[in-house]
Length: 390
Image 1 (spheres, rainbow, N blue to C red):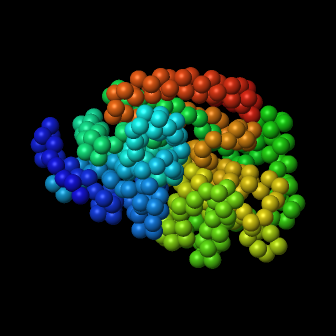
Image 2: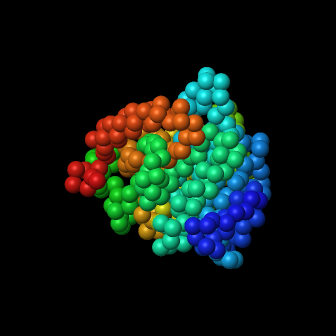
Image 3: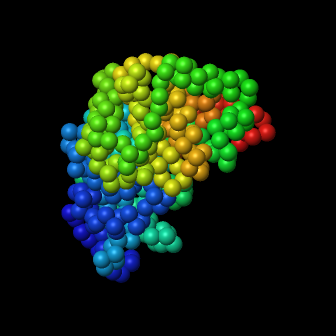
């Protein structure tokens, strides 16, 4: 752990840790807004405890904290990265440009929640003190990057006000697109369907009917009601997804069980049963105002079951719980016809080598224009009737 003092604010102590486990959970969680599950100490620490972030995966924790006495006043979930795995903001072209120039793109620093493309705080600070503390967090990250000889620092999916601050510091901004479902105060699922065009409404009803007619029964569970066997079953589904895609399963059974035990009311596990046996599952997490779809896996194929478990069960849950927004994950135009609308997501980037700053800025300028054009095209294809669109 490194420690220093910031002279611009007397009494402010800066620390860089090698694990979030070294930071008191109550102090960290006091800075988390909207009860965001991914930023809570329990979630981040569970990844460390159960080997989801380590050298094997190329994610080395370097969380930054700012203290006044024994009181934590600001923090940043920061990682030293030796690859670009699990970020969902793709910079492989940048890494390739460094390689062709005979330079190393790694290590780099990333302020993010590993493997989680969900917008949230990246510059945590006491309310009302952001303008004084955010610059110190930024300065600390840049100084650490120089010490490590990192190629840059990247803030992925920061909250909107943080993104504006980072943009104002002349950092490079990237844009991308996700699909989110907005809850407009629907009474029930049928009220939501009534706002869609006839064709989209009919399609959703058909998909739900196919699952029902196949004899599939769905259970919604949380950390209180899901059993040890349920988590073992879901972990098999989760692992199967990565086996089929030749990917790398980063989470594991002890992680899922610990998060469910520590944050029981913020977990939504949907299990699909057929002929007395669970065949598929979807895992979601919730904050006070948002639902986040994260993982899906299945051992058998049933027509439209993915849409039912991952989307329609989540929409129903949001309506019942009064949750404002459902973020089902990255990408996926197929979400549009099911009520999810295109939303621009952003990230901020500091590039250490001045020779690459201009070319990367040009790259992101073209990318932002392409993303804006794409969102405009998708918005024209909105599944909602004209009077409720927007």
